[in-house]
Amino acid sequence: MPLWHHYHIPTTVEEALAHLARYDGKARIIAGGTDLLIDLQHTEKGAHTLDALVDVTRIQAMTEISASEGWIYVGAAVTHTAVVDSALIELQATCLVESCGVVGGPQVRNVGTLGGNVAHALPAGDGTTSLIALDAEAHVAWADGRREWLPIGCLFKGPGESAIDSTRDVLVGFRFRPCAQREATAFKRIMRPQGVALPILGCAVWLKLDDRSDHCADVRICIGPVGSIPARASEAENALRGQVMDDETIQAVADIACQTLHPRTSKYRATADYRVYMIETLLKQALPLAARRAQTGIAQAEGVGLG
Ligand SMILES: Cc1cc2nc3c(=O)[nH]c(=O)nc-3n(C[C@H](O)[C@H](O)[C@H](O)COP(=O)(O)OP(=O)(O)OC[C@H]3O[C@@H](n4cnc5c(N)ncnc54)[C@H](O)[C@@H]3O)c2cc1C
Image (cartoon, rainbow, N blue to C red):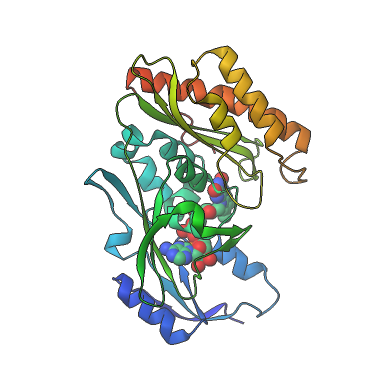
């Protein structure tokens, strides 16, 4: 039995919404298809047969990366490879290049999109982890005609459950503030070495140093997956704000993160104890790296292509 009957390639968001409306819940958005096609193939025979797929990868507004009026905009259908290739994002939001740069292998990165990563709503999504640390906003075109920007965290309702109904609504893109002076980001991930295995844990940080460049003026940390939805490590953030950026502080912040975050044992990832231990390891890598970038203004992505 075919997994879908019709395939539409709209060139505007309005056209995509109109296709979805016409099929009344029996059509679904497809971008790179790296998650969706596996989902469709692995469900009970025929249970997920769709009347149509609506391919959003030819909608110009959804494939652009741009900067204007103090925001960086990344369309939801931008591929991980396009993020990695963006000098603008590498300089202004390095963690996003680092996270998209370790998604799957080159074949997955070439077609998989940032919007698909977010809409799939898994707390392990690497692009998602960095967008949370960047305090990104998502632009959603709802089926009822509303268009709104909302904090990206509002989209996640549970593992694999999004506020966006991909049979009716369109996630159009993301925006976030570029790093200003003395601000920088970093992303680190622990992965089993087999390549296509699930990540054990990922960590994205955004850091702002004070005028003297040695104290933390502000910070955002996202470590995942540790819960049902991607979220900030707020206790660890509170422990770092206003503190001098030295080894002692970073150890104290890592200790608090280990006490307050509770990753579970997963046969596919690792034991809970090991994953807690890795929280410390990741923070001790990501925080000094972001601090160094904030001090020097030099932001060169690391680890890209090692996924
Ligand atoms: C071998 C392999 C390795 C992988 N490794 C990683 C990894 O290391 N890290 C990681 O984070 N992910 C990984 N993934 C998962 C996947 O590649 C990413 O999540 C990718 O970003 C999904 O994007 P996509 O464009 O392929 O989404 P699709 O599969 O096209 O769509 C995923 C879901 O989102 C919906 N959707 C897509 N775009 C929109 C939109 N604009 N608006 C509304 N709904 C939308 C679809 O309807 C579907 O429900 C891997 C996948 C594979 C197959």
